[in-house]
Structures are given as C-alpha cells and as structure tokens.
Length: 368
Figure (spheres, rainbow, N blue to C red):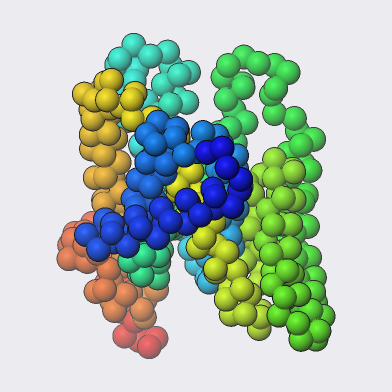
C-alpha cells in the first residue's frame, strides 16, 4: 500500500470487522478469520501490504499483553499447584513429539542435528493461537484448558535454552552461550520475582491517588511493556516477563482495574498479530507442492494429536494411582472418582498396590 498509515489502519480494521464475524458465524473461530484476512491483504494476493514484518514486530505486543492478562488470573499459590502439569505434561509432550518427529526425519536421511532442531521446533506450539482459541471457547478454567496452558507455559520456558543450543549444534563458537549472560538473566528474573510485588503495588497505590484514569492506563501499559522489555534485554522471553508481571499483580486489589484497562489493547493488537502472520503465508509455494504440504500437516497431526489427547488421562491416572497407593488417605477416594480413567486407576491400585491401598483405607477410617 502506497498511502499513509491512516489508510493502512482503515484497511486492517475493515478486514477484521468483515472477516471475523463471518468466520465465527460458520464456527471457524476468530483466529482463522484474522489469518485469512492477512493472507488476502498480504503481498501474495491483493498486495495491500508489502512489508508485513514491520506490522508483525509491532503486533507481537498483543501476545505480550495476552500473557500478562492470563498471569493476572493466576495467583502464585495457584501457579504452584500447576507445577506438576507444567513439568510433567510439558516435558513429556515435548520429548515424545520431538523424538517421534525427529525419528521420522532421520528415516528420511536428514542429518541428526537437523532432525533434532526441526523435530523439536515442530514439537512446540503457538501460545498465542492456543490461548486465543481457549479464550474464545471459555475453556481456560476447564481441566483441559489448564493442562493445555501448563504445556504451553513449559514450551515457552524450554524455547529459551533450545534457541541458545542451536549455535552449539551448528559449531558456531563465537555465538555459544555465555555463562555471564545466564547469570545476569537469572539474577534479573530473581530480582523481578522478589521485589516486583511490593514495588508494583506501591506504584499503583500512588497512581490510584491521582484519580486520573489515563494515568492509571499509562501505568498499566508501562508495567507490561517495561517488564517485557527488561526480560528481552537479558535474553529471556518478553512474553514470559509479562506473564510474571501479571502473576505478581494477581493478588493485588487493583487486578480487575488493570485487566479492564489492558483488555482492549490486547484484543486489537492480538488480532493485528494474526493478520500479520497471515500476510506471511505464501500461497504460491503451497500451490506449487500441495501434496508435500498436506502430507506434512497430516503427519504432524497424527503425531501430536493422539499424544495431546492421551496426556491428560495419563497424568490423571498417575496421580490417581499415587493417591490410592501412597497417600492422601482421607481425600483419595473422592478425588479419584472425579478423575479421568478412574476405573482403570482403581483396578491398577487393587491389583498392584493392594496392600498399600488397604493401609490407606485403614488410615482413612481411623484418622478421619
């Protein structure tokens, strides 16, 4: 587009207003509507926008704000309760997906380093797309929504060392991981987590006394973008920094006011982010080799979809059998009865751990 920024803004807004309601009307969701709008406006179809990279960089602020808003919903205590889902579910999903996909690439005569990098990259998922879909379906607070968010959070955490390891695999010595940078990053992270809560609460107490809504909005944006920038400067994920800032403010009395101020910016910028991603999709390359693209998508779905379906059930069964065999004497019967695969859990408990289960039942009757 050769016009000014006003024309570009009008075209993007018009595309969003037209595409999103149509796609939601047919049950496809807002994310697909934004992506299709981006494809149509991008350089490979109508060509309204030629340089989508600049829009994408600016629109990534929407992802940062989305992670901040999600952090506001998670208090530190609730986040600690999610740690098993994060590290168990996330690590198993990444390791198994990367192992299977990497093995398939090795069978296609890829070098093991290339297979490792590509397989691990394909094992990761889009945090922005996943969380947006969960939000649209009001499923973030469901069991599978929380478990999915835990896996996405682990993927954000593990992406940082993976990016640092790529130069090592490529043999680029002057770009290897600097331990001073690691210490600096961990130090800044610890500083934010230790001092962030009292400092941020004090900041918003002072700002609230001014009774000026625009100052409160500016302060909320400053916290989000400032924390994201600080984390990015020390080599960590900007989205992770915004998420931590949200968690630190989750117990604050200003949480609802901050969320109401950030939500409009988050929605608009996140939609712009998906439009910019759609602009980068090259339909000519897809049309040139449709069989290869379709086969790659099918293999990716066949590997990741069954694993993601099985993980919550396996996680629930493992915790259930642990409760039946080893602890939680008073709460394990009612807890197990509400978990996935509860029947198989009881069968496993009675056949392989029957003596421990009997001891648990005895303690439950005599202690409670």
